[in-house]
Image 1 (cartoon, one colour):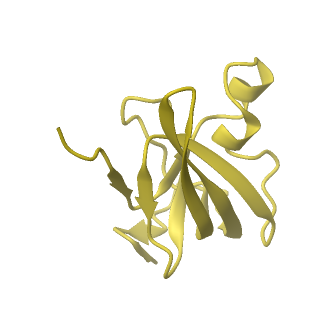
Image 2: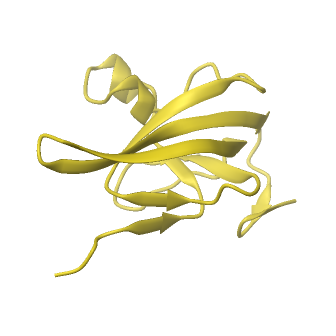
Length: 113
């Protein structure tokens, strides 16, 4: 047995429609509308580590590694691991730096272009 941990180069959240139909919590979804400069909370299942020293992409996920192009550039401000109902989660806060309104390439790996 080992320690299950994921290192994430991005923050992947669900579409806000998942919250509206009651399938997910608000913090598990991409905010709509998303406002530059605003701080939002996030919630992810599992023990995850994020990069704190610069901008990372905010993606939308459908699950099973089905990811969108970056929706925004964000900075992770805090991340905390905790247990609830026998499961491990990561919660935290991020600040939106720039909202992307096109499908252009805005990141190469962890570097914003």
